[in-house]
Length: 379
Image 1 (spheres, helix red, strand yellow):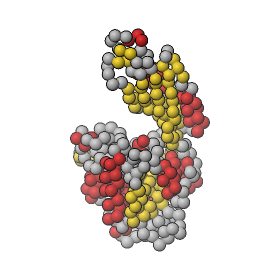
Image 2 (cartoon, rainbow, N blue to C red):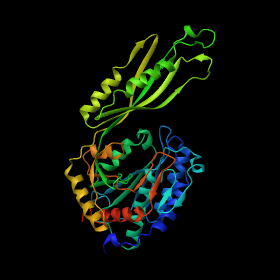
Image 3 (cartoon, rainbow, N blue to C red):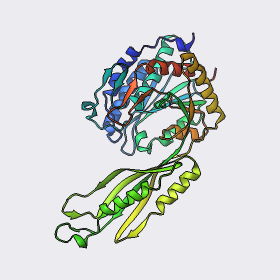
């Protein structure tokens, strides 16, 4: 049976996906992410997987690893489906962005990034199992809790799981044209800190040295370093408790995206060179988690892409591919040299916003693409 002809149904997939969207799972709420992990584990077990809950570390939620019965389990390199269950949306976002269907679109927190993609891969395995088919290679799902924070607690887990795999499929959202990703730019994070001198803002303003004002100037300096090949942005800032106090400390977080390792090294050096003291305020830069450059020239990855491109043609669309910004856990597996095909998840727009939505008809389209790959890799 041609796996592209399996009976996928958008309405049925959406029905199964809804509980995932309504189980809010922001990265920094470990209990919420663990509830989502338990839900995914239940659905994976229901379609025949052997499921293992991996307790969270470093304050993050749990992960789930699921393996499907296969005669070559442990004897042949298999396929890893790697996804994350955490989202950027805090608990309560459903009040502003409820799960709702409007025409050909469906809205909800995390539906595009990346619960929709995770679920269509699960649905692909469901239909494969239901049809009595056997994938050529063993299949493992690994869903993790901390991708939106840079994967600080599960990078080693992902790399260990991918190390002996024939292929890794990452159902992150499809690119705007529906394309896939076969390489990613590096992403480095930085923790920023200014130390000032406190004073009473109304009585002795001139005696103080504002850590907030100094950080504001540094932010402008940092973002002005952006080029086409290496970008800089500051997305988090924390400071102050009283408006009538000159702030003595300000913390912020910055992110840089670089197209090559050389660009990344230059960006890191530029950030670290900003450290020092000026007008009585010290500025400190500490490098945080980094996603390595994943180069789009791995022969195994290109083979995966060609396979997917042929399936997409049968499904009636052209699957483009190339390197992309916006890091994912594919950075890790791709940089290891493991053949990796990323962004084969659902089509949509507005990820990380209150307009996040998917194109409903892409559910069956991408599920068929996933099924085709699962039934062909290693055949």
